Structures are given as structure tokens and as C-alpha cells.
Image (cartoon, rainbow over all chains, first blue to last red; front, side, top):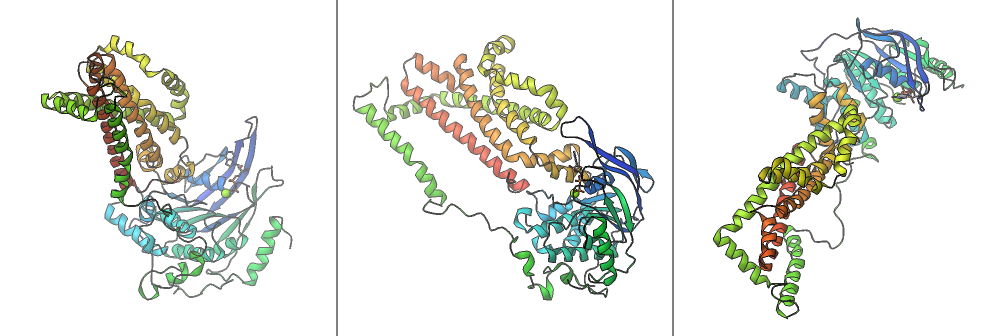
Length: 267
Length: 305
Ligand SMILES: Nc1ncnc2c1ncn2[C@@H]1O[C@H](COP(=O)(O)OP(=O)(O)O)[C@@H](O)[C@H]1O
Ligand SMILES: [Mg+2]
């Protein structure tokens, strides 16, 4: 391997994430009642695992992830990182959002720097950012601003920013959803490579069944009875296959059909 | 779809498809650069609009020279009496006269000082209060209506109170100028802050950035174009309020020069004061342009909003 992401000296052990009867509701549009979105969600992500959350659009996947990151508090139940109940933005987590969310006036390098943990010595920080930019293949665009690079590049910069935080839990919200098919596959491979070099816990949201099957140790399927009822865990599937996996492995085909049926698509 | 390479020897060039230097530096994959490729630099307006700085500056002088000519004609052909409209050369002469007596610098100096001090105070306060009201829902609920009501008072209405409270000295003039500079900055900053992209703010927060650092890293750069245009308006207001303050009671300054010249029938000096106000206004505005370029250099080009 030509580029191995060196494990930073500050590398910390991956953390476990547990959902304990998590429920979340939002005030309805007119504010007259509470609309439940998630109910009684319980599962545990072991340290170093890659777990994907799969579910139909609008079922509360982002809401679930935001609860782990401390970006919004659950209505009932709790999320724990290792043994601590999440009660605010947690320095152990880093979020890769569905959109790149880069600061448009900063260069790619400066944007990635934003992810560095507080009080990183500047020399160490520079080296780490350069290494990450190399990893995601943006070295030659380091000085560009987000508006001057393609959507795929911006998304990679966003991933690099999350990795710069050296997180014990990496939260990814449909990070590759907006990419073209080819770039998506490259990014998935990249994620696996990063994980191999530094096996942190990855909790990733997706609505792409194939992505879930190719990447994860386990797939958590969220479903709901009707589009207005709250979602909960329907099944946890463990594709017990060594990675990297071939996308046309027949064992995956069967699981794909099964997952699609769970999500209401008959084949 | 493509089969994943099964060995552990995947190179990054395969993984990301990006040129990373070295042997493969020229292999750029088609997929990423088609369609969503880097945007071309913004093109200048096409056509015959002149480009070079010098031509632009010279063309900007065409109208003033024409005005000067018309002025000269009107003042020499008997259309206006010299008291109504002195010749341009008479105005120049008045300027020379004041320059030699040293009065010119006194008037220009004191007026500029009042504007600069008042503008600095007013716009700094406008930025602070605007930031508070723009960022904190509580401040917006509690203070928003009050500041809005104060803004609705025509600012010259404060003059009698200022004279009563602060007296006729420098402080009351500077205060009036500061009031004039405060509201444009307050209004633009508080409004712009409420429209900063919440997603970017949330992303920054998720990386542990908060408080003052969140303001200086995300919110302030995001509203910078609004801040600059607020400062521009504030500066114009500052000059307006300066003249008002000096017209109403002072013994120095360009506003005083205006009333004094009017009382003594010195139309040449009156016109001189107006020309000086135009020049000073333009010069101080240019300083804001310098500040704007500095901030753009510091924070990068202003975000597209
Ligand atoms: N801040 C919010 N206020 C009100 N409703 C929200 C908020 N965030 C999400 N929702 C609602 O919760 C539901 C789930 O949203 P989300 O978690 O974004 O779904 P997903 O990511 O699975 O597409 C949606 O119906 C959405 O409208
Ligand atoms: Mg979502």
C-alpha cells in the first residue's frame, strides 16, 4: 500500500455506542401536538464496528445520528458513548454530514483544519491535515475554495475534516448519497481503507441497501408502520463476510432481496 | 459493478481515482471532472466596457470637468450674479486664502476628527448590539423592539436633548455622529446574522467550536459583506450628522464654514465647503474599500449569498 494513514500518536481507542429505548418526537407544524419520529430504539455498536442504519427517507435516521453527536437531545431514553450518557456535543464523536457543509470562504486545507481536536500543536496539525488531504486525494486542491471544486471533492474534504478530529466514533449521515455512482464506490473503498488503518467505531446512515451490505459488520433496519408513525428497529442483520466484499457476491444478493422486502420493495 | 480488489495492496490512486503526484499524476478520472467539475472563474462583463484602472479613473473625471465648464459658463455669462454663483476660480481663491490663514486645516481637521471618532464609536456599538440581537433569540425578543423604536426616532430629534445633557461641546457632536453611524450597522448586521446558513453553524458546533470562536470563525465571516455595506451607509450617515451638528452650533468645522459663509455672503467659501465635503466623503469611503480588501484577504473572498 503506497499510502498508509499513520495512526496519530494521539489515537484513542474506539468507543462503544448504545441506544437505550431511545425516543424522539418533534412539535407538529402548528405546535399543537408532538409528532413521534423514533420510538424505543435499542441496539449497541461495539468498539471498532462498522454499523449502518438503513431506513426509508424521513424515518428518523439523521435524528438518530444527531442524538449520538449531541446535536439534539432525545425525548426519552438515552444514548451512551462507552458508559457516559450523551448530553451535549461530545469531543469523542465527529460528524460527516449529508452535505459537505464547508466554510465557503476558507480553503480546503483551512476547512479540514477545523476538524482538528482543540489544542492540537500547529506543526502536528499541519502534518495531519496534509496526510488526510493526501489520503482523500485532494493534495492538489488544498488551496482551492469549496466553490472551486466538484461536489465529490467537497464531500471528500468533509470526510477528511471529520477524520481530522481523530474520533472514537465516526458518525456519517448518508455521506456518499449525493455522489455519482463511480465516486460513491471509490469513497466506500476509501472509508474501508481508513477503517483498516485505524479501526474506529463507524455509525453510518444510508438509504442504499447495497452500500449497507458492502460496508457493514451489521445493518440496523429502521421501519415504521405508516409514514406518520414512529420508526423503530425492525431487524439487525450481520453480513458475516470478510471485507472487502465483492458487490456481486451471491450471498449478498439474498440479503439484498431480504432487506428490500423489509423496506417494502417486493422483487 | 466493479469487483473490489481483494489484496491489501490497493493504492490510493485506485481508491480515490485522484492524481496524487508521481507516476500517475496525469490520470484524472473522467467521472469527477465531467459535469460537476470546478467552476470556471467568473467572467468579466463582455463588450466594450473599459478595463484598465487609468482609463476608468479618467472616464470618471469626464462628468466633473463638464460640470466645472457649465459652472464657469453660468458664472461668467451674467446668468447668475457673483454672489449667487461665484466663478470656480474664485472658489479656488477662497480655498487658498483659508489655507494661508491656517483656518482650512482647522475646519477640515476638526470635522474629520468628529466623523472618525463618532463613526468608530457608533459602528463598533452597532456591531456589538447587532451581533447580540442577531445571534441571541433572547436579546432579539427583549431588545429588538426597543432598538427598533429608537431607530424610528428621526435622529435629529435627539439634538435638543444632547445639548441639554452633554452641552454644546465636542462630546455632543461626536455623540450625534455616533448615533447616525450606529443604526445602519446595527440593522444590517442583526438582519444578516439571522440568515447565516444554520447547517454550517451546526457543522462548526459539532467540531466543538462555540462562543466567541464560533462568531469569529463562522458567523462574522459569513456576514462580512453585510457588515461592509453597513459600514458604508454608516459613514455616509456620519457625515450627514456631522454637518447637522455643526450647523446647529459650533465655531469650527465645515458645517460652521457653511453657516458662517452664508451669514457673511461668502458664496465662494460656501461652495468650497461643499466641494471639501464631497472630497472628504469620497476619501473616507475609499478607506472602507481598503478595509474591505483587507478582510477579504484575511478571510478569503466574500461568501456568495
Ligand atoms: N428539527 C426538527 N423539527 C421538526 N421536525 C423534524 C426536525 N428534524 C427532523 N424532523 C422530522 O423528523 C422526521 C425524520 O427526519 P430525519 O431524521 O431527517 O429523517 P431521515 O434522515 O431518515 O430522512 C421527518 O419527518 C422530519 O420532518
Ligand atoms: Mg437524513
